[in-house]
Image (cartoon, rainbow, N blue to C red; front, side, top):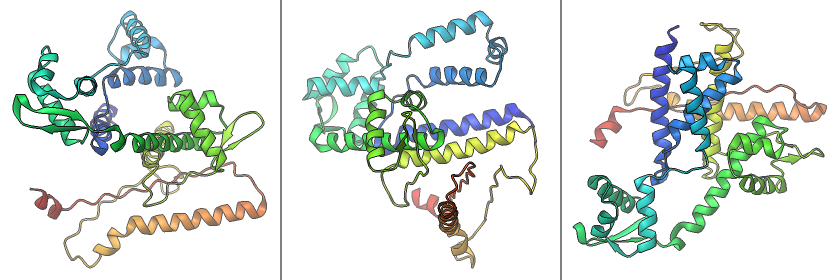
Length: 328
């Protein structure tokens, strides 16, 4: 097994994944701290696996002194939020609106002119800015808060609820402090999410102030909670692969209880089995929902609290040359 090739391939695909997440919904998530956070998180995870700091420094190609200095510097700056040009332009126009393009360019004269122009255009295209006129005399206004602020706030709260619910389901019973550390949300946000989750019965709180949940559900077609659903699927995949790697085995076995399988089905338009192939995801979802319901019914009937969990992840991706031709 060539680990280095595998690591490079996984990183490349992960960057594609992060780029998609950062631009989902037309927004531009700040990525200023991502590289530093990856370094710190990777260092911490290696320590959790028992790797000494000497070896970790060597894995990063650093001397031990340089490694310690880097960790110290990055740790000290975690409370300092970096600001991209995109964020800075958004805030500046919000403060000065209405404002013409020439004034914005003058304010950000030390930055690349084309980058500033691209940011202004991007903010218009994503619906955060209104623009009238053209060129340097174009005037920009921020879209009214009443247009989207309330819905955004509620959307953020719901996303937090599902992320906290997913974390409780995966890691419970857990204390508030533990959930804050895992989710990295503000304590007030976690408390707000837990209040809603316990009120509607999705999460339970015991006498020791530990939170737990016996289920996690994001129904098909439900717009809320997609963040938690994606994270849960991603975590299930990574968890299975890591568990497989930890066994030291470099091959699969038909008797495996942990592992995965990927199938590529090559079709052509009008193939007699096309409908059956495309219906695989829906069919497996239905089968798993039925199996879960029967398992829960038996547990409830016998009053036995589950002590084991089998995590099954299912995904499907349809690629068509016809779709690519239509895009061109």
